[in-house]
Length: 216
Image 1: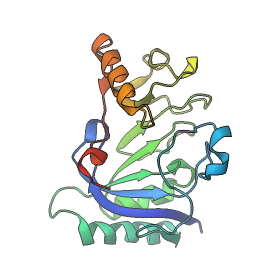
Image 2 (image 1 turned 135 degrees about the vertical axis):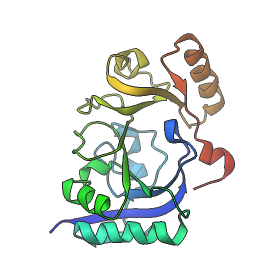
Image 3 (image 1 turned 30 degrees about the vertical axis):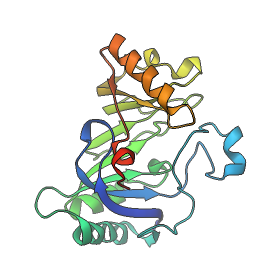
């Protein structure tokens, strides 16, 4: 029976992309295949601009859960404790890289617990069947395996040629978002992203609104 390692789980409003403003349980799985999560490895990581702590299981409502049913019941308890009354319960599986752990058993158990399921993935692993919303965020030097979904959200700008917006426009996604890179040049990145979207109407601007208004 599989053990799932969860960094944290909490209810908040989705702050990015097409589902901005929707209440959800953020189920953050520990671990990633593009960076160890340790600062000593950041400079040499495939993805070196991640702003998320996904190391270990010591976050709010984090832990190790033996079996898909235990995981799903934990997510349900988090929703019942802090989620809104009414509406369809929604869980966003994120990380790190959630598809290292999110499997058919976990999806089935979460569905049985009444959840609609979204995933935020770097796209280097094929998504299992049964997901309701797939958001792919490509990274340079990380070949994509998941070539379709609901939204493609590209952090912008990335210098590498293979991480330019034009490289992804032929993929099968409903929505295409550019999200300004959150680093020391954030103000300049916002301006550059807005300018690109003005000239390329296939792309829409996605801001991390949870950071702007102080939500987790």
